[in-house]
Image (cartoon, rainbow, N blue to C red; front, top):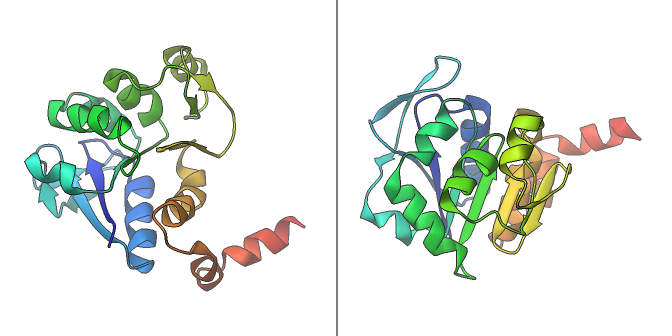
Length: 189
């Protein structure tokens, strides 16, 4: 069974972290909320979450690392040397995945030095696009480039989570229907 670590730094975006955890767990994918500092972590909107684990050397045992955005959450993830080292290691492995959403593609992945020439998206804005100027920045909702998956922000979190399920070998279609995603798709038509 695939294992996912969703990283929590003080000031993380609650919608992104919790929605991804919820959706992955519905898909029966083992998923831990991993704090980079303390057991209880306050999000960017003052919601306090109890993490499942505190970061340690076992981070390499996961199949996927997910970095939610939020500020200063993404900055706090970028300051965690253990996380940055594991992201660098995962970047060179075909069977390990790195996923980042919102501010984290720019803030965290650039610190890890893995953005050059990669297809990436992030939260829109000149500030983040400037950080990612060495990448192939695209304005799509979810972007997959090999073992790197990125997304734009809170409103794209469900799409991002569904893509993570499929990448990890699950099937998001039945889950989408059960969560009424199909009704949103029908509404657009």
